[in-house]
Image (cartoon, one colour):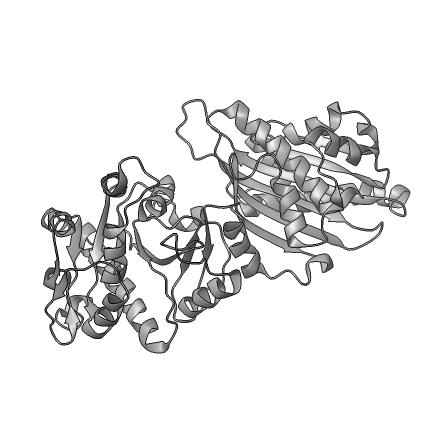
Length: 450
């Protein structure tokens, strides 16, 4: 019955307190003790709370959990949960282990500071048993706090923490039931979950890439990251203070020929940005970008298996991938600009560029001009990568816009060789003339980007 009930935060915490089989500890750093507070104030806390701790002082925190890691990091979170779990079992397992499902809840967070200059984010984790004496299970989350004030962020953390405990013990029947419970009343509008990891036999059938894609498809995250190196991390760990090249696209073709073109396009764009910045700066990073929703309203969104098929094709050729919830370039670059002040560049072929310019953007008051101003105000330029004449001809047949003409060189068409009929052509020429749209050389004609 509990699994089907949709309780508010108060009743979730109270239900948990009244369950005599659950007992554990809370360790919270960075946003008060808002999770533990729920269980302490709703009544019956003595049946749930073994200990609460908040090690705000760095020396105290280091003495408990070890030094050498950033305080808001996965490494610190795992050190916290290991320490709290070991201590909990050493103190209580002999006396309560036969009838108790133990848990240790931990979080390490950077809520909004007084000046409002930081990136509010953090890590939340839970180690728990599903049966007394059973094996431990771990759930780790990376979250972004979107409320405008510290007080509201603390409130949201409290709700999310209660949801996590309740969902872990009572809503693990499927990933959908778990994440529905986790997201209730707080995720999507107030908190994003852009990374999840899990360990334990209850998660044996939960596929990690599928879960990461699900976060975006379900609207729980604005973006998640897939690494060709196999290291699963949240987007902030990849983008923080980096100059970035984004290669957005549909990537429906996963054959070797198109994969090579995609890889060459991204590599050439990274080299172009490196030349733009100069050799004294760190090497820019490049990543492919897909959206979980279609570029046009009349198109159908790919299902998660199809999304992963496209992602895996890019990963297999050495490319990293960001999967975004929203398809617009200005939304993609806005998310990247949360984490870096360095230049952001998009690289795209003509099929995507013409879609971007031709889209009327009916969701915006200023339509197309507002969309372009949102994009280019963010220290963004678009590198226009040449397209083969064969691919351009095939794509143009299925596109509704008319008035496209071009010349070619060695079977390729560059941005300067593409003619777009007015009035859209006026906008295309303006962006080209003002260096918002930067033509890239045809492959093989300039050795420095070959």
